[in-house]
Length: 127
Image (cartoon, rainbow, N blue to C red; front, side):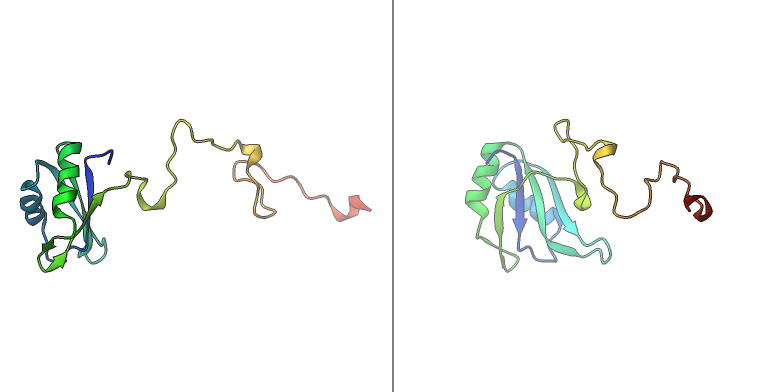
């Protein structure tokens, strides 16, 4: 485990940040608690992310709380994967190659929005 961020799954929909803070404080210092909610219904999605004070505390917390019962649910506690871009957006870093304009292929006969369309040849001139 290389991070202090933990994934907590199979949560009761009734669990609150205070409940999780109290539970995880028993294993080490908690920096933050973030329950993930459905943005439309504002109901918990049943998982959360906990930031522990140190990597050692995070490791100890996984060993202590994984598969333990909390609010009648068997918890899944593991190291969280790196926090990626939100909403499926493509994250760009300094090392991410960005295609140049010439490399982008068009999906149709439409010119790119920043270019003027070339004039159509008149049918009389083409003969």
